[in-house]
Length: 181
Length: 183
Image (cartoon, helix red, strand yellow):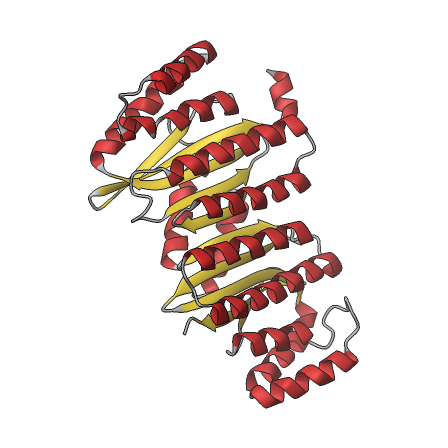
């Protein structure tokens, strides 16, 4: 590692308030460890139990969705936890094929157009549909994440050769802001 | 729904993490619970990757020392900005444990002298330095006998790399890297 780059990473993490970043292949053991590290971080950062619980649940869903992702075994994924003045921000970043990219993007746009009732009913529908393909099943956590965060999912992507580097950002608002709504 | 300006930094950070082969990055306060989490996480990661026990043990020890050092300095420095960073990277069959923290510029010469003296010592020299430092050391004394540096050099089996970057007239950013060979 170039030592001069450490300052740059420190600056980007500081400016964008990223607290924790993991870059690599994901396993169930690592999910547990990352959750534990993030939980400890939340313990010192957040006093409100409800917000803590919400952030933890969203993190768990995000990590599980990375873990079950399309290219998880061959391509490293990234998980990041950040905090802004308004919210805790959880980023799941992974590589996807063009086909899955289209499916994912369309699905997130659809999820974002649903209200809470619709999210709940679609969640039930997905769970009861036995003929869902693995790709379709992998989308289920996104409904969960939207429900648990009580927020719309944001995404962005970059083309990396034949694949897409896809980032889903989920925000969980701080209590004072939740109360303001 | 697109990501705001902050979100667009994720790809910049991702590129940087990939280019620098960073597995884990953390910025913030280092307390005992966080340290325990990182140690546990690294242990799991190394076990999953099938890394041999000798390397695992070395890396674990260096990591523990580096994290404890940074935690101790954060508590005692009394600087306005006590944020610090920890990075773990893997490149060319080597693991790199990197810490970065603010330091008072007037302390740089002292720290540099200690690091240079550690880096110039051989295995036996380090052993002797360690004994002497333990005799002189006062627990929690900042900038004390340099026990942490000696320990990291001994356990990693490699010279410690470092860099100081001035941030203002009084403060600099101190980056320290220990390298553990995976063979």
